[in-house]
Amino acid sequence: SSWVFDGVDDYIDCGLFTPIDSGSAVTISAWFKSPSGSYSNYGRLVNVEKHVEIYQSAVGAPNTKGRFYYKLMGQYGNSFSTLGGTLASGVGDLCDGNWHHLCFVFKGATLNATAYEDGVAVVTGATSKGNLNSATDKLYIGADPAGANPITGNIANVHIYPRALSANEVLHNYNALKGRFS
Image 1: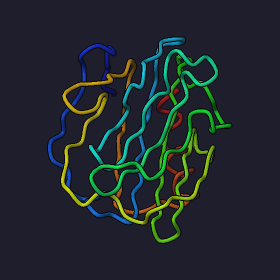
Image 2 (image 1 turned 180 degrees about the horizontal axis):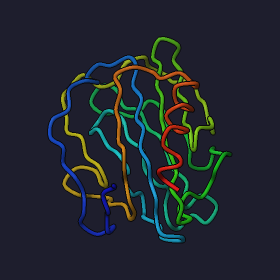
Image 3 (image 1 turned 90 degrees about the vertical axis):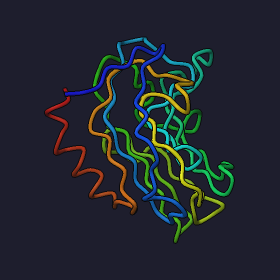
């Protein structure tokens, strides 16, 4: 089963989320399906306020709409790395009516982050910091704080790990559920 978000006012406020405060590693994994051609302007898939988020590109950008950005935030919630969007060369437009697995892995010890789509690394980049924000903030699914930037589509199997999954673990998680979400 999955949650359905209308892109207007649907979101889940999961409350305060502490496991990744000052974290030097994190993995966010989720399944997403949007009706074909149905885009959300900067729609948030998963947002741990001022820590890490996965969100859609701008609707008005024809070369990137339907692609996702993957962002890490450090002290005061300031961004220190954003992957994806125009740089993602893998799956591309994920608003095609099909289920897709999105996974973002941050490994602070190596100052490295990787975004995976459907089990494949689509973009890897260096980060300028090795730790996430230290303050505790809320976890949102389907939007960001107070319901801003809602997303259109279905979201399922959201997992946040306070460690960096390996490429093999990401692929295993994708393969384990791809038959369920097809």
